Structures are given as C-alpha cells and as structure tokens.
Amino acid sequence: MFTDFDVHEKSNVIAILQTSQDGTKKINTYDLETRQLTGEINNEYIPQGPRLSPSGKQLAFFTNDNPLFLWNIKQNSVTTIFDEPHLYAGFVEWSNDGKQICFSAYSIEPNKKTPPDIYSINLESLEVNQLTNSKGVDRFPQWSPSNQYVAYHRQHLHEPNTPKKIYIFNTNTKVCDFIPHIEGSYHRIGRYCWSRDSTQILINETSKSGSLLKIFCISDMNLVQTFSYPEVLGGAFLPKSDDILIVCKNELVIASSKTGELLRKINLPDDIAIQQTIIGPSIALNPSSNYIYFLNELSCIYRVDYEGSIELLFKDTEEKLPNFKHQEYIVISRDKRNIPVHCFTPDNPKNTGVLLVHGGPGETVNSPNDPLIIRLLEEGYEVIVPAYRGCSGYGQEHKEANHGEYGRADVWDILAAGADWKIKTGNSRPLAIMGYSYGGFLTMLSLTYTDVSWDYGISLWGGTRIEHLGLHLPRAYPVDPIERAIAEKERNPLEQANKIKTPLLIIHGGKDTTSTNEEVQFIQQQVQIHGGVCDLIIYDDDTHGLPKHRQEMFKQILTFLGK
Image (cartoon, rainbow, N blue to C red; front, side, top):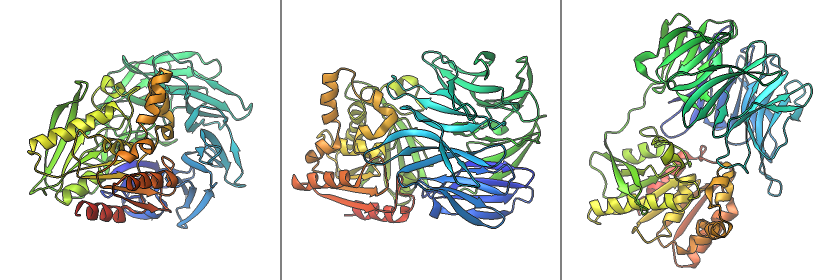
C-alpha cells in the first residue's frame, strides 16, 4: 500500500513510501516518465515521510527509531544528519533554498521528558537550532518560500480537547505569533500552505459545523478570504499563480485567492477520495509546474493538469488477500451504548477466534489493510474487531464518547464484543484477545475483568499507563479530582496486573516510549507472583510497532495461540 510520496519534476524523480501487508516499509524512487525503479530505502531504516530536496538530488526522511537521514539519490548513499539519543525526531521539511531542514522532536530523557518542539538543522555545518521551547505540543513545521517563517501546529496540554492551533515562528526576529482561533474549532496546515510571496497562509478550520479554508495575512493576522465547499479535506496555494487548490472528497476545485471566485472543478477518477495523511490530503506540487499530483485511497498516484486532464502514473501492485467474509453488527455495551463490531471470517476457520483491539485512541478500523488482520486470516483465525468508543469513522459523538472514560468505558465495549461472540458460538470455542499500542493497554485491562472467559491474551507494543499518552491525557480522566485519583489506579495495568489469570504474552520494543522495559517487566512479575502465566519478549533494538521484528513477532504470536 502506498502511504506517502513526493515528486521533483525537473529531476524526473518520484519517491513513494510503501507499506507491505506485514507492516514493513520502504521508500522507492522511480523515473517519473519511464516509471522504472531507480532506488530503494529498505525496512532497515524504518523509513517515513520522504521529502525530496529543492534540487531533487537528495531525499530526507525520518524513522520510528529517532535519527534523521539524507539520501544522496545519484550516489545511493545514506547519511545520518541528526541522531541525539534523548531526542526523537520526525516530520522533516526542506527550506526553499535547500540549505536547511526543519523538524519536530521530543525528549525521552527519563528526568526531562518534554512535548515536541520545532528545530532546524543547517545541512552544511549540521548545527541544530531549537526554534520553539513551549509547554505545548509543536509539530508538523512548514517553511515559507522566503525561508523567513516556519508555521507549525501547537496543542496546549492543559486545554480541554487540546485543539490544534497554528503558530508562526519568524526566523529573523525569533518571535512566535499565532493565527486567530475560534472557540470549538481546530486548525491545520498542509505542505503548500504558504503563498508564493510568503505574505499569506492557508488554514483548514474544522468545527462541528464542518470544514472551511481560510487565508490569513501574516503581517497583521487578519482574515483575507474564506472558502466553503462541501466535504472540504484541505487545500494548497498553487505555485505559479495566486489561485488555490481546494481538495474535496470527490473533486478538486481551483479558486482565486484574491476574489474567492470558483475557476474550475476537476472530478476525481472513479470518485475515489484522495488519501488523508496526518497533515491533510496527500498531494504534491512543483514550483514551475502546471500539474497536481495526488495519491488516492486505492494506492493510485495520478497526475492532473489545471484543465482536468488526468493520467494514472502508478498503482500499487496489490498483494493477494486471503478469502474471507466480512460482517458488521452492533453489540450493546454496559451503559447501553451501541458499539459497531466487524467480524472477518476466513474459509474453514480454526476453532479459536481472535478479538483484535486496534490502536489509537481515535483510529478507525483499518480493514482489510491491517497487517495483523491479514496475517490472522491467512492463518485461518476468525477476527473480531470492535469499534470501541473513541474510534473514528462513526461520527463525532462516538469519537468523543470516551472523554473522561479512557480505560473504563472503552473496556466495557471490548468486553461486550467478546461476550457476544462467546454467546453466539455457544461458549464452545476458545477466544483470544490481542491488542496493539493503545489496544494493548486496553487488552491488559480487559483481562482483569471476569465478564469474558478469555483463553489467551496478547499485548503488542502496548501502553502501560495513560500518562504516556501525552496529548490524550487532558481528556482521559474524570474532571473531579477524587474520581480522577480513583481512575488513575483502576485504569492502570501496573496497578491491576495482579488480577490477570489468563495466559498473557507481551511483546515490546526496548526503544518504545509508550511503555518502558521496567514497566512491562513489572507487569510480568505481578501476573506471575499472583498465580498467572505471562511470557515477555523484549526486542532491545526495536521501537513502537516493532517494525524490525515483524516476522519474529508473527511467529511468537502463532506459537502462543497454538499452545
């Protein structure tokens, strides 16, 4: 599956980040016209976020494992440009002159953990400058074409719902300013948020009433223009004019930034939406080009000109999925809430079922592209996936229904799905519960309840404390201080592990920041001391997601389920 890309027309280069069914990643470069493969960064680097330099000769990328890298495409050599042991870096973007890269990084030093800040690095001297130093979460920086400004997202941890706001750092004056923000909304910027003269910035503003695009003037932060179209996903300033591109769910719209006038519409192929990334629609533009490149949700990369002529450039060669039936139904949680559940049943399923708790909180059920779902189906396991409260894809009310209830009501939802499957199968078939990331956290808590007679439990790179969740912490617990104090203990696997009697397998990356080696070892000890069985595997050289040890991980899972 294609998950990100970048294009440099003058150099005839396109770089594509591809994620395989087993979760491993690679960046491939291709000749833009012949479509021939010209280079590869393999999973050894755990690559993310490919960004081609303004010259097209180099590619910057980050990893899940801290360092930032620079790939000289012609020489096929990779250089580490940033590797601070206690700073985890990511989300790289080039300055317009190609001399600097900005990025966000957060401290993991045990006694000095901090939220992410914005940094820049001079590529000649490799000197690193910290641009922001706030108590907020600063991420996703974007250079202005003049190189004078860096715009970025900031979220204040003390604010309810931690809304995203856009701040702008002036590299000359070292002063930060922010875009005016309406209560109840959040702002987002994408890669092409700056006007070509760096005087204006394009913001995506989202609230309960929908999404708008707004243009603000940098000199006085006044609102210049507002664009309202159905199902707006994001936008960009076009590089050769004062027009903007408005990305809607099923079409592209080009409009004048000066007058707001609609200039033309371009329908997307087969009405397939452009793929969304954490900073907006997956598009690429070039300074001297009249083309718009985009990646859609079916892993197809297209090139379209301003007149609407569309050309398919690349389509991911689909790996064959196992045969399965997909059923979606509703279960009733403990507080009477309706919880959607997906059930994937392969041909000739094994006797054991697996209830899979996906990560987040806030992610959607990513079927059939979830590597764990695919592998379990290939091995003949029926997979049950509850869309517990807090998940995306079922409306804003469902997504926000976990506020104050992390680790409690979402656990109820999981228990309801497990109990329902047990009843439907006449309590005659074994049921394992397996979760990853926040889903691993919920898995361990679910095993402390007696509502479901689980037969196996598996936590993969699971969180051990809500306090590790950072941005989620302000809305995770009850507001009342007495209720919060109780919840901090009741919803903590470290405090509740002594109740786990179901055989448990924990697989953890030694460099993971959502839990520590000491914490998972403590959970294992508590389970064992109180009469339970807990196997713990730590891959010291791996991190969140276990990208370096996927095959070993699958082998351990299947061995455990086969006991």
